Length: 131
Image (cartoon, rainbow, N blue to C red; front, side, top):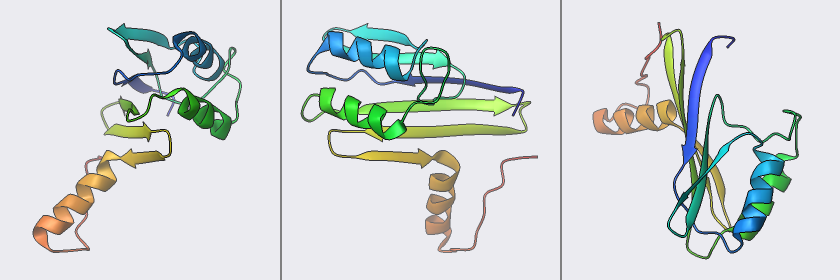
């Protein structure tokens, strides 16, 4: 995917310690822009979303997730939406949801295919959006 062009951003979410969140962002998603709206925070950047350190080095994903979970306010969620493409041969859309207790990643094409299969009542139906 050498020509992949992507962008990701989060919703605005509440954290219990904004300074600790800034440190978390620098440690696990370095280079991402911190965004603020009122008392809520978030982040965005170009490229694919992945957890990485100061120089793009790998970091422990489970540490990154659990560290963020400890900072999230009760009843809130960090929702990371990525969208991108490679030479318009395909469009990619993925969402990552992190709550205090849950981590889930959803691929839009998989969700879309399951929805169409349900509408058509055909579990073998496939959606091909690439060329």
